[in-house]
Image (tube, rainbow, N blue to C red; front, side, top):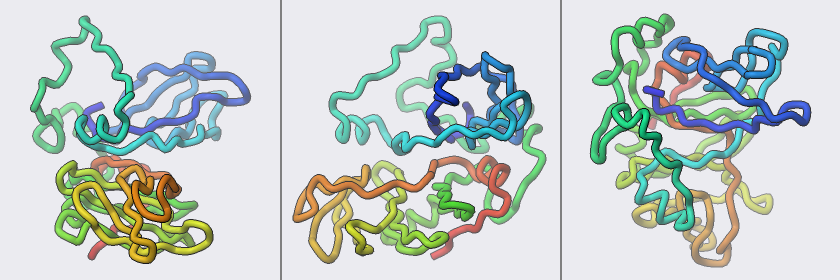
Length: 242
């Protein structure tokens, strides 16, 4: 997709694995169809809105973060990479090539974005977080201008939101561990320190040092995307401001 909204879902529904194809574009985000029933699904939410499976929704997976290859490889040294398909070689991005935001939105694509909200620019990147019925956008520009750590509550869940300038990577976690709400501070590139224990966590939410080593924080449903896509699917969203 042209948009940055990489997201994953468990494709098992009623014990059967669904497979999908591309149907079209709505509000700048992909519409998919499942090959069993031809029902239509929103890639952004995993929700089916038309066809025999209308009203069903796939379970969202914590699919990792929007990051650089170097950052991902450091955190997951044994990771596998999908092999390129020579038939589509001309469409792949070249090394060092950046194609995102307004500069890469062709007219036939922007024409599908019919509902807009001027609180942010159309293609502003943000971390969108959903907790229950509550949704909030954390614009990367504002995160980059701050300390790299945001502590607040969405719904009834205390969150810690982290931003790493080097990777331009943002992540959100439930700040609770063993019933206690932890308070964090930036400890260095890709590291965030629990002030009480001194344990340092990486951007995967895993403690690398200290008394909490190897413990993990829980991720809420979240993804990095452009404003137009997040607002289209979450028009009730609030926007974090420092």
